[in-house]
Structures are given as C-alpha cells and as structure tokens.
Length: 480
Image (cartoon, rainbow, N blue to C red; front, side, top):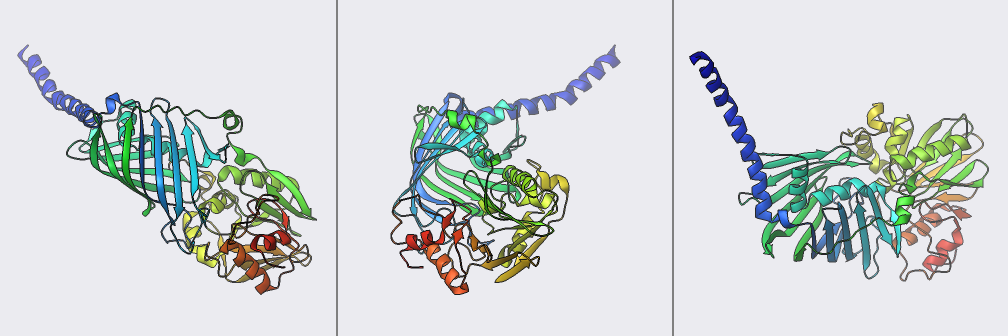
C-alpha cells in the first residue's frame, strides 16, 4: 500500500508542473485578451494616414517597393464574419513617377479592397471585381490585427510559449505574435503564399497603444513585406464594435475565379490574343514550337492559358514564355510554366531575381512548381533578341528610358506588324479624353517605336484591348 501511494505521489509530482504550465499558458492568453479588451470586441474600425507601398512593383528587383501618400486609410473588420474592408485615398509620392502600382496618380486615387470568408474582391468604379489572388494576404491582415491575433489563437486552442503566440491556417498563412510586458501585441510575423516567390514574409509592428472606450489599440503601425516597407500608419481614430457589414456581392460569388476564364482572338495566322479579366497573353506559333508572351497573375491563370494554347496549337510544345518585367502581377504565373519545363525569357536585369524566385520553396500552399522540383531555366535579354524559324520572326526589345521599370521587354512581329507590351501603354476607354499631361510611360513607348523604326500596325497590350497604334499617338497628342 505504501509503495502504491508512493507511486501515485510521484506521478502527481510529475504531472502537476505540466498541468500548471498549461493553465498558466491559457491564463497568459486570457491576460492578453483582457489587456486589449478583446473579449468584448466583435468588430473594429480604425482610420489613419501616412505612407503605403506597392508590393512587388519596384523599378528593379532588389529596390524598395514604390511609395504613395495616404491621405486616409480606414480598415473595418468584423471578427464574427471574418470580413475586412480597406478604404484608401492615396496620392502620388514619387516625382517623377517611378515603378508600377498604377502610376502616375493624377489627383487622388481611391481604393476599396474587401474580403469575407473565402472570397476577396475589389470595388472598381462601382463594380465588384473578384480578386482571388489577394485572398490569403487579406485573411492574414484580418487575423494579424491585435484583437484578431487573440481571437484566432483562442479559436484554434493555441497557447503562449513565453511571450509568443503562434498558429497557422493551412493553405493560407502562418502567424507568430510577440507579446509585450504589458500583455499587448507588439509584433506579428507571418508567412503568406506568393505567386512569384513561393512564401513571402510579412512583419507588422504595433506600438503607442491608447485606450478607446475600454479597448486598447495601437496608434502607430508599421509593416514590411520581404524586408521592405509596405505601410507606415499614424492612427487617429478607433471605433470598437462599429457597425461593419461586409458581404460578398452576387457577382463575386458567381464568378469567384475570373483568372480561369480565357477569351481567344485570332489576330493573324498563328497568332492569338488571349484576354479575359485584367491581364492578357499572346500565343505565337512557330514551325516546331510555341512562344507565349506573358504569364501574369497566378498559377490558375497560367494553367488556363497553357490549356488554351494546347488547344490552339496541338502537338507543338511551349518552348518559351516571354516575361515583360518582374512585377508580381506580370510574373505571377511563371512558376506554372517552369513546372512544365518551359524556358523563361526576361530582360537581363530580372534574370537573377527570377531564377532565385522560381526555385524558391512554397511551403504554405505548395504549387505546381514546388511539386515538380524542376530547376527553372531563365534566359536574359540585353537590348534585343530575335527568334526565327525561317518563316516567322519574333523580335524582343528592351524598352529604354521608361520610368516604370528598368528591364521591360516588348515583343514585335515585323511581318504581322504587331507589337505587344505591358504597362508602357494601356488604351483608355473608347471615346475617353486622354490624360493631360500624357503619361511618361506612354511617351517612352512611342519614343522606343521611333528609335527602333518599327512599322507597327496594331498593339496587343497586356492590359486593355487591341487597338491600332494610332490610338497611342492620339493619347499622347503626337502625330505618328
């Protein structure tokens, strides 16, 4: 009996520290919730101003993302419905405009970016447009708010380890939060899937907490993505439990993945313009192989483009995909092509970056490239490269002197008098008045056409629609 009681006592001594440790961990998380006032918060809305940066839009790989002034940034979150809305009013910060991200901005630009559950969309004009490529990041942003961290951690039965809270949402993101000595969320570190680089790190720092009706919230927020600044916000107003009703529009529910929709237009023998949505591609048939110009957005878009290409040109392999420049919306589908063994052609300034990015792991949401294990084949172009099969000639040129990007390529078919490019020129709406003064990017394209003495009939822009080259000259107010 004495031996049995001794064993029981020993077991109690062994188990008790673990039990106390678990209780303390739970109590610590509850202490954070109490310090923040999170238990009473079902929604929150905060407003501020400062600076914001366009991720993946630098003028050269390795430079910081381009900056904009934020006149107003309002984030509205409903934790019960897992919904978020960002409303921004931003203005041009860089003069002259440099890099991507819809520059130059004339006056004010208004953005309305939303997510609810597993649906993400933007309001463009007054119309909702599905944005599935932004889903994971927006879900991360929602749960990376200080109160969101605690609520998500509790919902997943996560516990604190020291001053750290960690959890993950499979296929979406992983998150680690650091808690300050006064039990407030000081830093959030996340890993989010990215179409170009596989996994991308996001870090958000919170400080200068103040009390807003019994709820603590930071009045300074700074964020970096891949080590570069993405947000610097001075918070001026916080409204706990504000009325936040965000519901996905029917148009988004019915067409949640527009990237998979490809519309084909034959523009010459063996040349097709693949449109649908916001970003386009061009398919060029050669004697023994196929060239695809541009693999934009993400894997889903490229899978659809590859499938359509194989229907258009059965029996011939896709040998090359030409990348206009490294900006994430124009390089987001390259990993799917690399998984198929297709060689990427890009301007030399992008080559090293893309070679590394396309070989990078994708652990949060493994993609086709990660599963294939293929080493990427990336070839650089200096000022010019010509591909020919004796019948068709494809000329690839660097666009010189354009502020949008130092390593932009355009593709010219001399026989067909067709020119394809991205972001140097996107046609304005039919009958619309061109902007004044004209975009320096548009002017640079016209200057390059003149410099190279290209005989262009029609433009196949990788945004917008097919137009005669006269539309470019009309837009910049110059005679051809």
